[in-house]
Image (cartoon, rainbow, N blue to C red; front, side, top):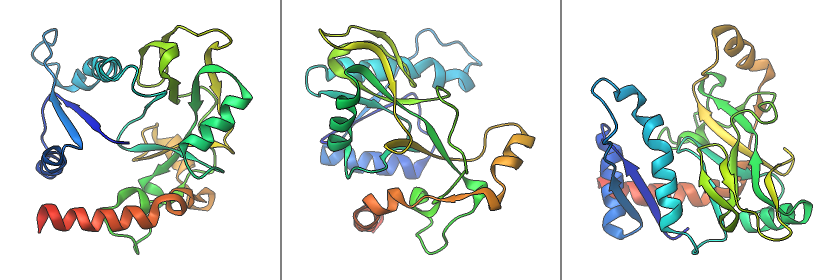
Length: 232
C-alpha cells in the first residue's frame, strides 16, 4: 500500500483528525471532504450509508488502471489470510481455484464482549481483542470482497454491483473457504440481545492469533513510533 484516500463528511473525533492530518502531511493519506447535495436536514444518522458508495466508487475510478485488485473493507475489520503470509500469495492461490471477478470473505467476529488481552496496549484495539466467536458468519452474509479491478464497474461496501468479466473470467464472486481467508471484524455485538448472549458466551470463544502472528510485531513497533511522533 502506497497511499490511503480518506473520504469524510465531517470529523468529530479530535484524535482521529490529528492522526489523519499527520499522515496527510507525509503524503501517505489523501484527505477528501465529501459534499452531499442530495442530503436533507435531519439525515445525519443516514450520512454514512448515503455517502458510502459514492466515496468507494470515486476512489475506485480515480485509481483505475493502477492496481490489479481493489479491496473494500471498513476501518474496524481486515481481511486476513489464514494460511498464506500476504495478499499476493493468497490471491494467487485463489486465482487457481476460479477465474472470477471477485473473491468474497466471510466475517469472523471479534466482539468486544468476548474480552481482551490486557498485556497489549489499549490503543491497539485489534491486537488487544484476539478472542472471536466460535462460528463464522453464514455464507453470503455481510461479506467483504477483493475485486479484480479490470472486471467490475461499480462497487458496494460488500460486493460488486456490476461486473464486466474479461475473456475466460466468470462474472460474480468466489466464496473464499474459511481455512484460506476471513474478514476479521472487531466491534460490539450488533445483533439482538438473545443472539449476542449466545455468540459472546466466553466458553464458546476462539483465540484468534492469526493477525498477531502476521503483523503483531511490526504493527506494535510502527504504532509506538507514530504515537511518539504525533503526540510527543
